[in-house]
Image (cartoon, rainbow, N blue to C red; front, top):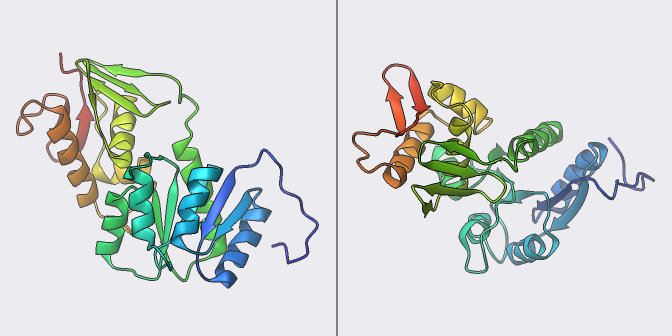
Length: 244
């Protein structure tokens, strides 16, 4: 790992990671690790500064601590994902000293892409950054996917059902888009955790998948209790089918 004073110069075209933490020592260690991994790192030490940098600098990914002065991390996340100034789908990895399931679920519901508990390995964080960026920048990002009356446009994260646009949360969109690229394929909850959340029951339970499927049905199905589009294969998992 590079040390302070290193002559390393980051590639101007490298992804930019905004590291938000009020602990300067943590920011420094993370910077060294991400510098060595080939990323350009910018920093913020409080919530208001983080929001300003996200909106003005458009980082490729944000590493966001929950315990911040001025504005808490969850409030920053809430503002980024649905604030009055406009919604952003910038990938966000949440850092927290709290290991409770409630905090993880709240972060997920607000649109976090991953969650890492302190103390953490800088090497693991770099691996999470790589994984989230691979998952959120697919090679086919410009290609629309059509399944029956459903049209999904990954480039602008837009969903249209029978001519009407449907508003989805970031993770609802990710789940739907993944299933739409594998029509009629049945995925278990465990597989969806791995492929969509890039996680496991270590920090997310399978109930997370069940809840997101339920939310999608409320938004996509004429009768959520008898789904035609997003179906359950009993004892196995879920599949997306042509609803025509």
